[in-house]
Amino acid sequence: MLVKNWMSKNVITINEDESMQDALKLMKQHNIRMMPVLRNGQLVGVVTDRDLKRASASDATTLDVHELLYLISKIKVKSIMSKNPISVSPDLTVEETAEVLLNNKISGAPVVDEKGQVVGTITQTDLFRVLIALTGVGKRGIQFAFQAEDRPGSIKDLADVIRRYGGRMVSILSSYENVPAGYRKVYIRMHGIQRSQLMTLKEELSKTATLLYLVDHRENRREIY
Figure 1 (cartoon, rainbow, N blue to C red):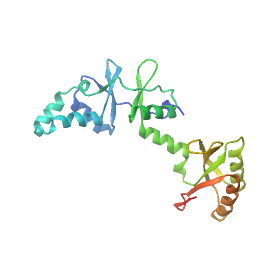
Figure 2 (cartoon, rainbow, N blue to C red):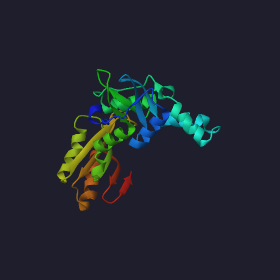
Figure 3 (tube, helix red, strand yellow):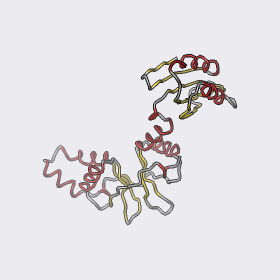
Figure 4 (cartoon, helix red, strand yellow):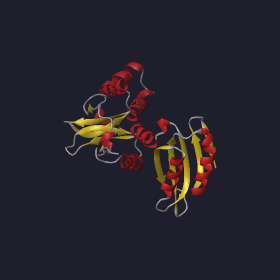
């Protein structure tokens, strides 16, 4: 899953010589929290709602409203923007991008192509959309979590049991975080299981791997083991 398929392509940018007031208006108008800052069409910084709030607050205690409005109309974006911004390529994967944002403690980044042109932005909100799509949570259904042996065929064994009960799998994810050596966590979301068969299905799955939890969104039911 590449950044170019999930980024926001309708990029709102601002020139470095525009005023802080202009930046405030654009962010409010487009309901965004970050804007790439350009100089002659090239990325030179980013300005965020946090930058704007910090700049406003620095003099707010000593100015009246009219003086504050005059001040923000004179302050240039280039004086409050974050310079040397972190950017990502449109061909980066979304998981690589999430790592970049996490490691740099930022909420989003401009997407820049090989010509140096800003072609989009990718934010935490976009990554949340990816997570929802990957897990299939929007389709509700039932999610099982297991601790399974880390061997060829261990996930297939679980999937075969589910298929025998008429289940249709929406997503299968696995992780090696916080498990003993030789095991992995497996998360399977499914549809098509009859409620009358759920107890028997759980028992059979438990013989194949350790069942960690079950979430049945149809009944808002959770079982933690």
